[in-house]
Image: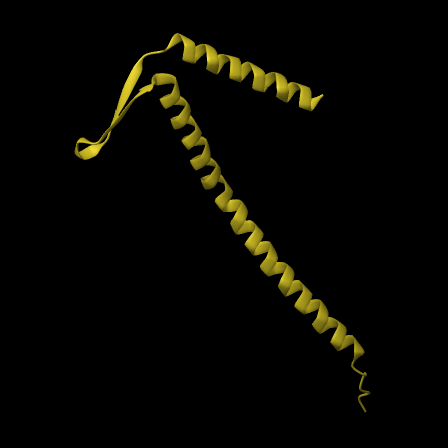
Length: 99
């Protein structure tokens, strides 16, 4: 069911994108600093590229805390294994009777 909903959502977004591209055939020139220019490109292509760059940048920024948590988890897991090994060694030591 979830896959069908995702497919329908993707199809709707795709059709909206195609209809947007067909309704906006005008060309735009991308102007950078120092007189650099690119183009002309279709307006819809420029919007799609900027949107995709935003999604990629947002994904990278959103994944940074996840990567930090994974590193912290690995560090804590290693420390826990070291402590478990130490506990096992301590359990194997003979008990001393106190007089």
